[in-house]
Length: 169
Image 1: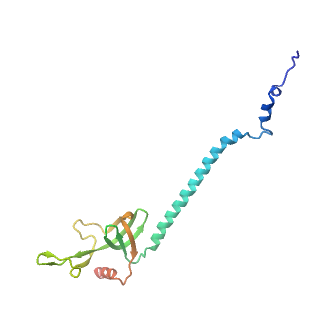
Image 2 (image 1 turned 180 degrees about the vertical axis):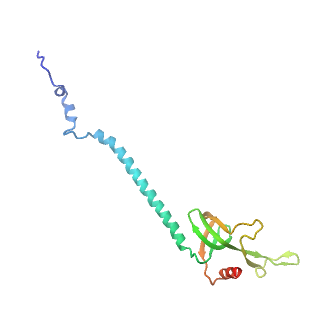
Image 3 (image 1 turned 60 degrees about the vertical axis):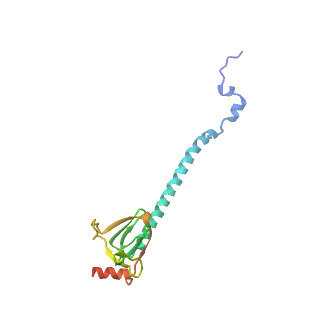
């Protein structure tokens, strides 16, 4: 028997030596552990990009809506309940429209012999300035965007704009 010192690395079976990485390259097991981390970083980066693009599109939409407002003129705001308000839109965002210098139409029905008539010839629409009501509201509204069907700029030669000018006049 020879009691000479031996190298333990040389005593390993052949299959174990073959499976060892060559040139200190990482094994497949190490790459598998890094892959989920890379995937999480990639997903996070994609989510950030989507959020930034989505936020940019929402901001662009709000800015575009605000640019469409003819600031020197009046606008008509049509609500889902059938009410229409006329005034000056100050701003629009995803949640609210801000309207001030507000007017609305009030239909007055003619009364004959103690009964109310319903013929359209005898009904008159009158433009009423907001703020003169019993509860005394301020002349500004924050209207929920969910309640707005649409809004439009009014021409200065339209009947509503002329009535407002006459009221102020």
